[in-house]
Length: 115
Image (tube, rainbow, N blue to C red):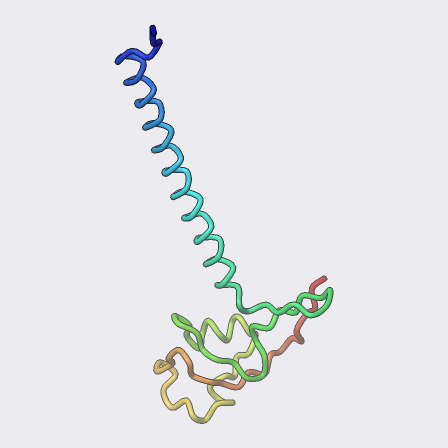
């Protein structure tokens, strides 16, 4: 019985299978990383709430919870409320703002409904 499998053809087949396995593994890792990045970017968009067919942008409700890295100046610009300190007597030092601090916001402009 004359076999067509020679040591050279076996080595070639193993090399091709090994390369294909590495290619599949690298592709799988890349897909997992891309999926996790997409999920984390969706989780960062917690400031918008969907109601029916309307997208309601709610960063400046009357009650506002300070986020990490925010200052009264950035909140004032974002919410168009220049009188945050005057409306919140519990803020004794405007520089002492921390994540989780609850403040009252009175925006100059009403919220917009985006369609």
